[in-house]
Amino acid sequence: MQRGLAGLLVSLVRLQGIEFNKNEDASRITTSNPYVQETIETIALRAKLVGDGDKSENICREELLHKSDFWQSEAQNRTGGGVLHYKKPYGTAGGTAVELLHFPGLERWEEFTCLNSLREVEPQIKFILNDGGLDDI
Image (cartoon, rainbow, N blue to C red; front, side, top):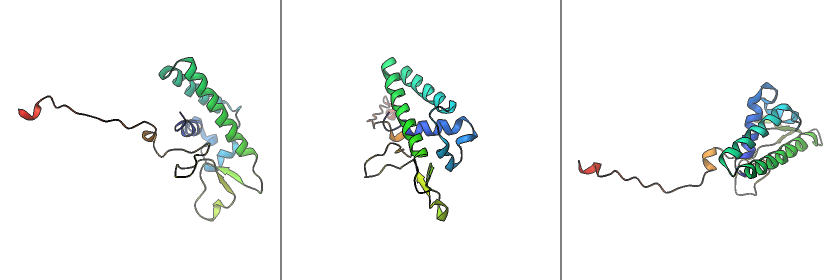
């Protein structure tokens, strides 16, 4: 959950409608927004279904509420004319932009560090294929 929730929260909120699609629309977030509330409940319900039932649902909901509060705080507490964006725009237009999303690296993970792919969330497994003697035919 630690690796995937931030990206999942942002992507599902953005997919709910056009209000949060643009890069600079990250600054418009409020935790009371119906899109945010619906997203949190959808993800928490999914955690309940695939995890430890109510325990997983509650842990997931708490983490998502914390992340949405953090997101709103970042959007509303900008000083010096900074505006929260999902990612800094390229070129000179990004002068006052503040990034919400961060890519993982060697530095400490931020609240909204997001992986490039959800495949990076799952642990690697060893895969052994037994051809059942098909090579002998």
